[in-house]
Amino acid sequence: MTVEAAVAEAFREEWGRVVATLIRVTGDWDLAEECAQEAFALALERWPRDGVPRRPGAWLTTAARNRAVDRLRRRTKEAAKLQEVATLADDHAPARDDSGVPDDRLRLIFTCCHPALPLEARVALTLRTLTGMTTAEIARAFLVSEPTMAKRLVRAKSKITNAGIPYRVPPAHLLPERTGSVLAVLYLLFNEGYAASAGADLVRRDLCAEAVRLARLLTRLMPDEPEAYGLLALMLLHHSRRAARVDAAGDLVTLEHQDRAKWDRGEIGEGVAVLEAALRRDRPGPYQLQAAIAACHATAPDAAGTDWARIAELYRRLARVVPSPVVRLNQAVAVAMADGPEAGLELVDALRDSGELAGYHLLPATRADLLRRLGRRPEAAAAYREALGLASTEAERRYLAERLAGTGEDGPGEP
Image (cartoon, rainbow, N blue to C red; front, side):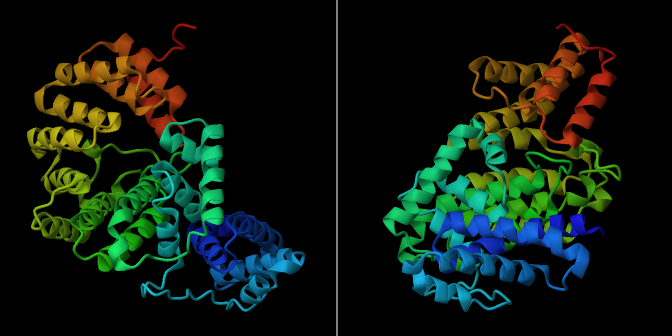
């Protein structure tokens, strides 16, 4: 592995831990991010000469801590914080708070999910600090412009600082008011790993694994919350297919063509068991419904044996609970599989006409696939070209280009 690759891997695995630790001890979000960035830049400079350290995370935390010490020395009024940062252990072992949760990253999520912050700001801020996602990547995930997202992040950080929001998991009686936000954060964290919003890799397994780990922590923290279990089940069932989602060349393999022998049957079994435990509480919610959909796919013997009528019904129920255009798009796909492409296309065209998913590449990609199945190749090609222009990962672009070529209409199209 090259040094550049080692630093990139360390960024994926350690960014959230380094930033969360520095936020805990300094209380300064911008300082934590800046010092973490400087630590990774220093790694690019030092590791080629000294070699990749045995424990990259500890090295990076120490380097970031030293940068924070240097910065704080210039602020004499912050002597107390300087002493706290200077005594931070090199092994960056997390400190416990009165919740008994020994994980800086989980405390970071609960801090970001304080009810004083708007919901979208809570999720965006956590993704920025925990994963190192750029503002542009988060903006794409939320389907908003980059300047809009930048302003949202600045306001959220200022609110935490000015309101003196504590960096901790709240006591048990306050957990319910933040549950929805925390679940949303973990879900988006997993989704960014499961289908990266940008870059060469479609799947970022490190983010998926981190989201699963934090979801497990959350179920232990909130053992009576069925939606926490529903989310964990959903993650496990999706994560079970990770080895089959891309081929050796890194190209996307759609669900119907995946080699089911590569699916992790242990994770599928665990996911189904966790889902059943959640459903026994008789409080179904959106994550449990999505997990039930994922279970239909994961337990089907093959693509032809998938119960698409059941999946379409589950999506109808989900759309009533979560009136999201993305949910309605997925519902349209299920309807197309259960009742035929014409029925699905009618729903997709209604979504397109509403403008709710403008700029979302999966809308024209889905429409293209349905048009292709109906034999309307010129229209399918035009829709594939539209999707190609919107797709943000190389794997998705390669997949769409291949589909476009399959229409026999892969010329440039109309100007």
